[in-house]
Length: 200
Picture 1: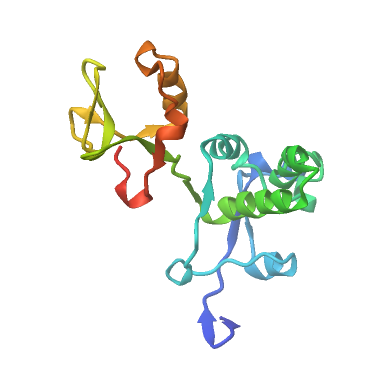
Picture 2: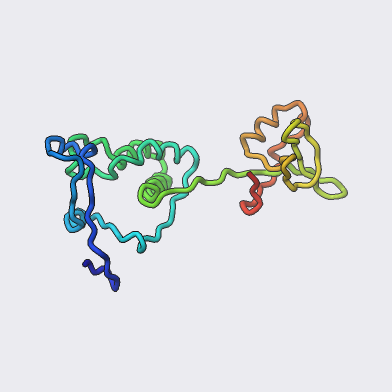
């Protein structure tokens, strides 16, 4: 048994697949057991399933797509993976971080969130949505688009199975090019939708 603070954690073995470990390519069998003590010496710890409480990372759609490409790589270049020092998650992440080389805060945030996603999983950040609002003497009205016909009209902001009132920035940019938007600056008229009002 292993004491951690005031809690007692059952010792667990780790199993490593031979196909993922080039250094063991000449060994017999396909599955190798590594004791928890050995992994702990390398700074790796595994808790019993009923003890683990984690917070998932929040990623953009683009970040999640990148993450899915490399999530199955080992996180770091442990000696077992020394045959290919570039074939680990941290190396791929470092290469990706070059896009933020002028902003260390964004670089650190990107590294922290993607590392968190590797161990804890992730959720996709909800894309911002907007209403298109016009103000009249009788009060505000909002752009409604018929989901079947595509017709535009102004009414309440309530979205239904037939009418759409919430739009992403990409959709607004596309609608701005529509002849029906002539004389209207939709980006000036947009009002951000709070997340608790989001409709699919």
